[in-house]
Amino acid sequence: MKYISQICIIFGFTLLGEGLQRLVPVSIPASVYGLVLLFLALMTGVVKLEQVKEAGDFLRSLLPLLFVGPTVGILEHWELIRGELFPILLIVVSTTAVTFGISGVVTQRINEKGGKTE
Image 1 (cartoon, one colour):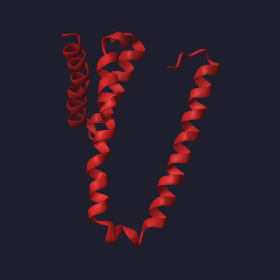
Image 2 (tube, one colour; image 1 turned 135 degrees about the vertical axis):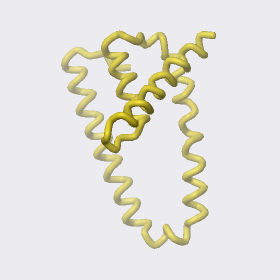
Image 3 (tube, one colour; image 1 turned 135 degrees about the horizontal axis):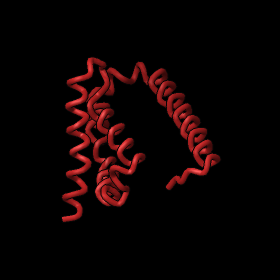
C-alpha cells in the first residue's frame, strides 16, 4: 500500500504539471512543470522524502527501458544517420561534458554551503 500512495503522490505532481502547462502560455513540457513542483514541495517540506523515496527509486530503475525504443529507431534509420554521425557524436559528447561540468560545479557549491547530497 505504501508504494501505491507514493506513486499517487508522484503522479499527482505530474497531473499538476499537466494542468499548469495548459494554463501557462509558455512552451515548457508538462513533465518539467511537474518535476519543478515536486522539487519545490520537497524543498519546502510539503512532501517529505520518505513519502516518495521508494517509488522514486523504483521508477528511476526503469529508466534504461526508455532508451530501447530510440535505439531501435536509430538502427532502423542507420543509412540516414551514417552520413551525419560525426556532427551528431560531436554534439552528444560536448553537451554531455557541459552537463557533467555544470552538475559538478552545482554539487560543489551545494556542499560548500552545507547542503546534503545523496
